[in-house]
Image: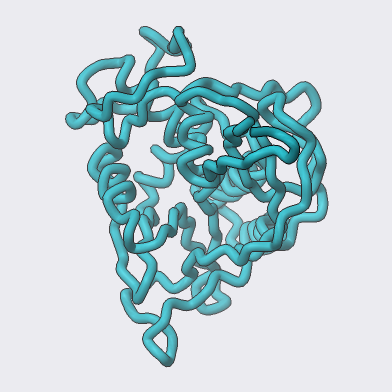
Length: 273
């Protein structure tokens, strides 16, 4: 008998399953190829520079005998049957994120943002950079993929109407750093929450950004933001989600997460024809 598996991989420091699938098994550590160089220049050899904050342990989950997922908003015309019979929209008239011309209606926007949240949980990164050890900080949201997947990042850039695309030898990065655009990114993920450890980095990122935009004391500002920054990404030691945090696993969030970190396998079980 053949069994079909969907493998979901994400960085985590706990054994909690997010979507009610099998308990995680340790997979071979995979180095994140996210790029921390925000110019179009690579390293000395022309290769992109690795982000030192992005090498994380990975966990694998399995969903056995799964049907197709919801239709991808990236390729909406692909005739993919849906596993889910109902897509729930939660904001309705309270939708507050600005409207984008590339999305036709509120349902399309909701579906995209849910997908974008799942994709960010698997591929996104929140970074804070201090300029030349001074009191100026740069807040960055980025997604780095292999160059073969550039179409996905171009779709995200076009739909959000923000950010830049940077090319490297084998990688391509969607990069957002303008403060007004960072504010919009914060609003999106406040309305469409992340569900992995990435939520913790987002929360710290949001706290530091608000502090930076509102503080009048530059001395205290620098110390506080540096403290927040030091506990993000690879510097994180506490991976506990906030008390009472409710995971929101929607069909489109799951689709985005799978498209970022999932893989499909067919295995023949021993002793079967």
